[in-house]
Image (cartoon, rainbow, N blue to C red; front, top):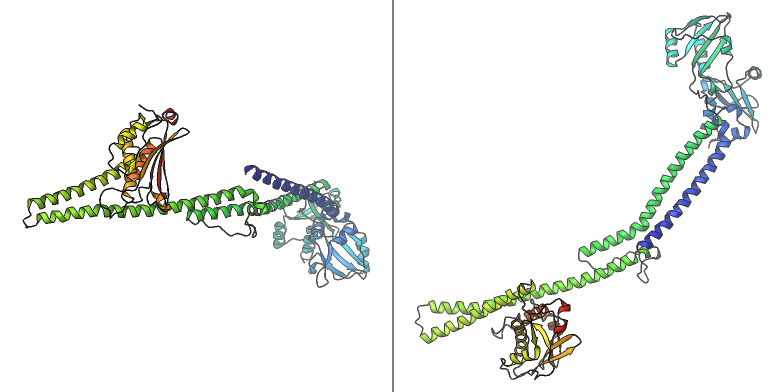
Length: 565
């Protein structure tokens, strides 16, 4: 059983390993291909090829052109905006707000942009072009300041705006000397060389700067930290970032796969376990019927389905357990019924003599003058009834003592034929015949206790058969056993009587036949025989009944753990 389950689990997890390996290889290939195709779109947009640009421009359901988030992010990190234009210079769509851009470019606008190194254009298919215009946050901020009438003087409100953007405004003369700055805490001033340090790749600039030469020959400059500053944002770093994202994605997928796989394993192995638990629960409620579950069992033959055959041994064990429990339940109910019947009979047996004793005592107590003969008769009956009750109580106590090994058995080596001969001399019944002698057979018995066994068995045969019914007592050898048989030629007994003959809860006696027995004789006989290391059984048919007592030969006593005196 355990080896089957082990092999099944090994197979499942080997498949799981192969699935994970294939998934990881596919994800790595996907990331590599995607990294090669989208690499430029995430670093410097000016380096992206036309095919990459085309793949990031889509149309919505209404026919409007849209830029992908990746393309817009690339434009932002490159310090500019994107505009899709047609051959007439009309702007089709833009990544910037409408208020910040023109609706159409004139011929002269294109001439000015051609001299601007920050602008870049891709000639796309179907008479469209994509225009990248460098437009950083510092450009927007300076343009905003220049719209003020007081410019180049900076108002208090404008200073607040500069502080919000962590930016500073500076004014230089033609010689590069600083005339004004909005924040006195900034010590380092720019020189001409630093103004020319503008790199084409915005991510490599720690600080973004925008300058304009004013009409009076001074130069206005806005400086602010670059939000996209990443000096080591090289191809390898970008690829590593994507790889880490891929690994995270892979583990997310792996976790989902594990959850699904665990759910499948739980269904595959948990369903039969749940089925068996329901079956055990039914057994706990003393419900021994079968559970119909066609997802577990085949409808035709009732066997477990092939995928659940690993649990076949468990299923068979539970079926056997249910059958045994059901049989034990029947026996328990039968025993309980016998016990109730016996208690009812015992109560009757005690009540009858008690009624007689009570009746005679009332008669003796009355004012009637009884003769001495009548008083003697009353006393005799009361004594007889009391003796019967005493015997009944003693026998009941004796059965419990034997059951709890509270009776001392004093074993002696006895020649069985001689013992039977002595017992026969005490029996006055002419209908009982005993063996006349033969082979010397020795057994280890307690003479006093075994004498009662014979009395109970033979007395039962005499009492429950018509008067004069022949009864035969014989001795035989069978291997290491001595067989003592008490056979009558009487009316026999039913199967039900044979099954319960030695049960102390079964009252085989007839309560109307007088007070000559307690009804516990054969129960005591069985317990005494077993205390001698023997066995007793009954066989009956319409020709009579045979009770067989098996005792071990004296040579075999030691092997059975009994030490004779």
